[in-house]
Image (cartoon, rainbow, N blue to C red; front, side, top):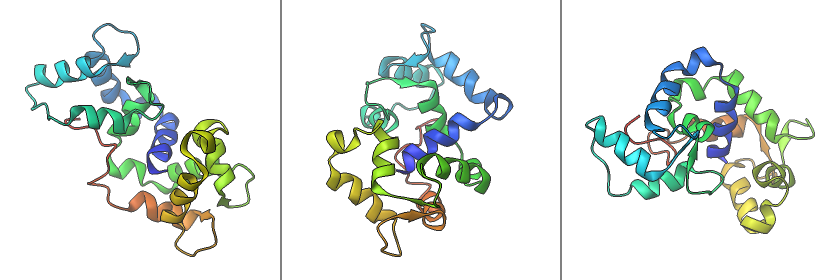
Length: 168
């Protein structure tokens, strides 16, 4: 859920806020097709003199929200957002509203499934996985996620977040 929320936030940033990240993405995207392969990412890190971690494939998989084995621009942005930016309440509120499809101030498991996979998340992930995602964030036990719980999730464990790009 947190990775998906970061993806929504990344899509809302204006060009001025992400100019440097765009330049980095364009440098890594050597064939200029708008996506990064693991080879392009690995080569880019090496050219920058950065250590390529042995678990780079795992890092790429954590960033690759649509599971197509490449990183598109918005996935790259989501992975590179710094904590100050993604913890801005106005950006988080905008992301929350994307998940809160009916506008009642709470995210239900049906709404989460709808947003995550265009309604087919239960088929792909299973209803148990959707409910587990809700349960991890739902601190008051009502079976839904309110904005306070959403913000707590966004503030949790930012340094260990799996969707942070190594080296960016």
